[in-house]
Image 1 (tube, helix red, strand yellow):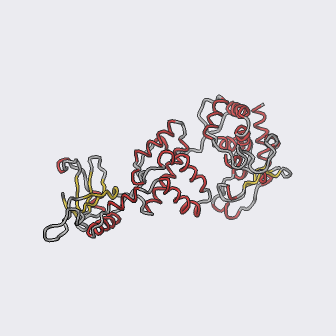
Image 2 (tube, rainbow, N blue to C red; image 1 turned 135 degrees about the vertical axis):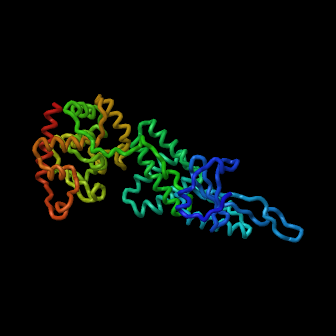
Image 3 (cartoon, rainbow, N blue to C red; image 1 turned 90 degrees about the horizontal axis):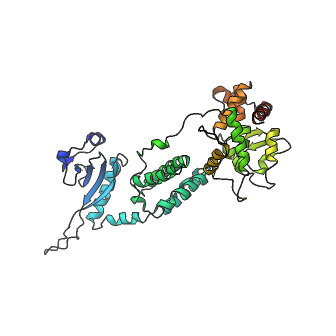
Length: 401
């Protein structure tokens, strides 16, 4: 084993050389400044820290009364650079100190293994999400519904990248790529929190590569007349709750949650508008959606109840949009790929063709004004938005009919 004075540059330059490998296949280098701390380089190029120690007394007592150390033990501290050199030295020194006092640091690791994903995720929700994240319920439900069934009883330290890949693979095979992206994002945030609390040494999602889950940064595409007809009729066949939601999204160009989570109290029938409160709007400000005659005709068909306009249990907003989109695709028969976000692209494109200027289109879609416009232009465009959505509804009606 070679002994080196570790620093980040030295660790970066270390390469695997089969001629230097031990019978195990790895190459181990010991730190000059912290004897007992090793960096092992594997054939794959992975570099991981470990500490090797002996515990006085494990080998018995010599005739003269001296404590014998017995065999050496090794504890893995995590991979570099996910575990920084400074942290690895601190953990190694703690383990070596405990061993010198006759305490086996593996006992602490066994206690860590009792920390399960379920227990830690509950602590994550209470200590991190609820105090800091307004929509913490969405993250909590993602972890609870999609991660806990597979990982819930697993010790945190035992969860590896291959486990995460297995979870994501299953979701991709089921066509739930969007939810898989959410799982990946929220799991990574969870494990980073666990590292900060010293519940784990590394994040199994660091460096995880999934080209099949690459985010789609394109704005989308505008639907053709025929696609609009097919989607409208397909949504009509679906019935409540998803059918009316999709038709309202087509008519108004709003974000899915603006209608899906709308409550009866947010709908002003007399003034013919939907007021989306700042608490659930993307730009954290109130947003007014004028209601055209065509939109009102759909609202009139909704169940007469207080609370959420679209719900299956009466207490929470409707969910299950992945399956609903599949049903819409089957009912509409549209062959070309499209997203619900494309309804917004279609609205903006058609409003432009109808002659409405950019600032009115931005107001309709709820796009935040930029630069000096954001600072100085406080005009709400209420009447202009109503005129635009009325014209757009008439435009769609001519296509659908």
